[in-house]
Image 1 (cartoon, one colour):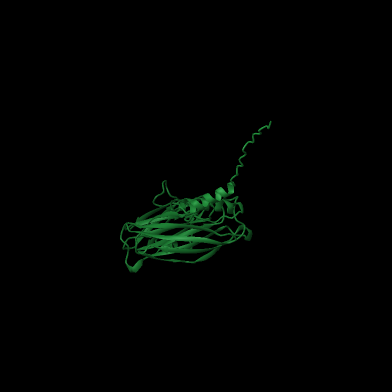
Image 2: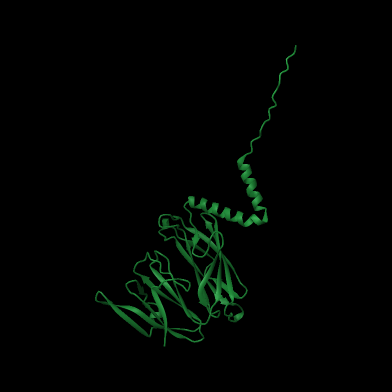
Length: 291
């Protein structure tokens, strides 16, 4: 008598390679329109993380890896040349920085109601290994297009792209938004921590010139006495500190439809005294209009 031997059907389970699944997922994301921006964001974050592992830092106060929109809050009359400084850096903080130099290129586009130009289209951030400070900057000049002043409330924009070329490739970008303000005299303080000086940008959007007074505490900041604002000053006041007289206010004339820059040296360079029309608190330098 034959014995029937029951054979168990063996099903061979094919294991799916997780790397293949990940690649497929990424491909699907990139080729599905609604996920393109998400995929680009994820890629930029991963790429930046990889570069930071190589001690490579490429950043800016107005540009980012995911295209920042940066609003310029200082009023612009829409008539005179307006200058925007973009600060670049190759350090994350005082403990993390790039030792090598970083070369980079700059391109831009702007709205049709303005004309723009750069003071340079390529530059280098000198790294710590070459006795650099890991900082650089470039300036974009904005003028109304066609020779006609822009109207109050009119918007203009500049789209800037900075791409490093060595030692690694990284792109950061941003759209700078600028609104034409009311006719007035406004100012902003441009500063960063660990910088020995700050600058005050005074914009006179009026059709006539005006005398402007800057008041400050000389124990906090000191006026650069080589600048035109001081050399053309019409009235100054002082205060005594340890038996010496220090300027604590300066009055000078600011031309109509113009922007004047005044430099101050900081007693404590680690401080950041940045201030604009959107800031809260009391600025270290006060502006007032005089007769």
